[in-house]
Image 1 (cartoon, rainbow, N blue to C red):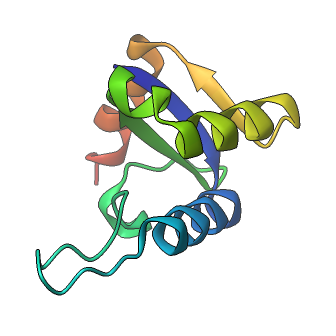
Image 2: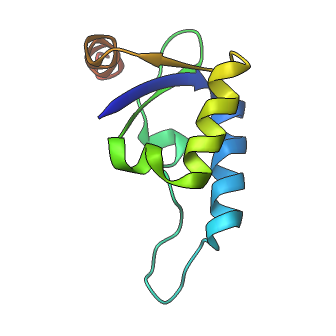
Amino acid sequence: MRYFRSAVPTYGELCEQLDAAYGYPKPETKTLRTLPAVDELPSDADGRIYLAVPDEYCEYQLPKQALTALLGQGLAEEITEEQYSIALLSDSQP
């Protein structure tokens, strides 16, 4: 697994690009999108979302290109599993 965090607008744009490229939503499979919706992801007080992505998915051409660009521009940050776990715990606190 690889772990990332980014601002909500950055993640939203990424989802829109990947969904369009892969032809989502797909009624035949009842699949609505390539990645989880923002409201399904942990977030922090700074308005960043946290995402865990399988290694294999990160190697597909389109996600790999997008990740390379986002990371290179500083719009997304690759984080450790520990940082992701802390975000999960913090997000579940009242």
